[in-house]
Length: 76
View 1 (cartoon, rainbow, N blue to C red):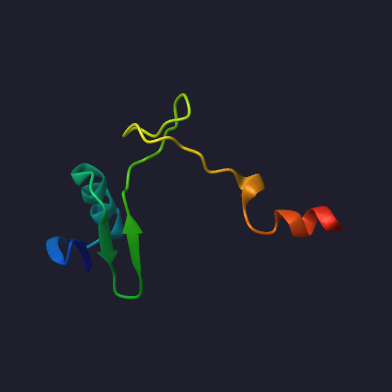
View 2 (cartoon, rainbow, N blue to C red):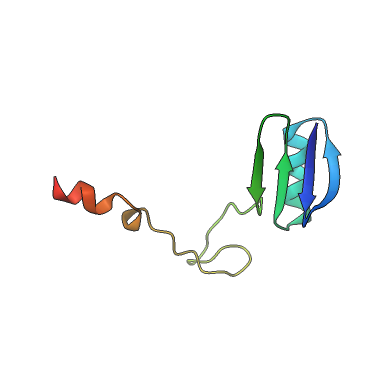
């Protein structure tokens, strides 16, 4: 059983993770999906970046080169 939760309120229950993910994408808000062995959190359904922006208009500025570990690799 997978529970979709938002702000400590259970929104819905699903038998499969796929159903829970589809519901989370449809509601379009930050949710937690709790399963029998794990939980995942997030705003599901963001899958495209156009002109440097996410579908909700927020600038996408993540850069792998700026992640922790970059400097360590450059020293070698």
